[in-house]
Length: 372
Image (tube, rainbow, N blue to C red; front, side, top):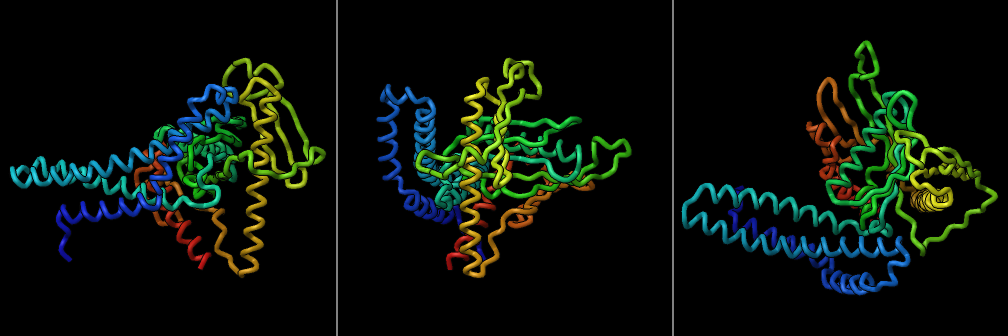
């Protein structure tokens, strides 16, 4: 089959962009942007800092999408002119420049297309990510910390604000657990496919015999709770412990019993927060995290009941989901989608969009299969 000429490729991309634009409903986005701008201009909004930040983040997220769509449309028009110029002047350098721009636009349109798949009931929310070291001893604790850095670097690369709520450090190296928020619209929908067990294979830096070690860490992703959410939590079913924050520092936060750990006795769910100086602030954040986890648990139970009624058993997206091999070869591979790369250093430095996009497409295809 003959390869399409550049004009046809641009036409195809323009058609895909038009479909994406229709699904995203840019007109509705523009209306929301106008409303949010009006809210952000109200001085009274800033009396509630948390709500004000949510409004500004939502506004920034919508403006980013609209600007990206309109910018890609303009770049496609400019690209057609660039190819014509290269043809008229018979200029290989200009043709190479146009080819590179075409490839970049194909990638960006693909990313926007993935964005249209984030239409789950809670996909547009911010996310709470929890990482726990699992089997593998000190290597697993080190691996959990490597994963924390990977996700925080990913968020930084994308310009997403984050807030680390709690980190429990292991004795020798690494961390036992950590919880942090990714405060960007659609963070939950984007990251929910990361839920599951991540497996690392490498030569252990903690083994004086240089033996290969396999270690595991669990990643949990839940949507941030909102005011419209409600779940009853009986205070008598909670155990609240206060303790002194641990970890590197010497800050004031480490000198008082301000950290809070809450255990929900019926479910065994434990949440902690130690990033604030105030015990009351830490407790409020921990309660919000607990509510998010209880809501997620409730949704999972409801989904399990539906699956049982339908005789469906394809919804378990937990368990092992990605392998990271650093020895005897270099590879990161998702066991569900098949996405794979040999550039392990880039992945561990936060370049995971390729895996995330594949997950979103995979989950949406499974959800469509469920619906049918």
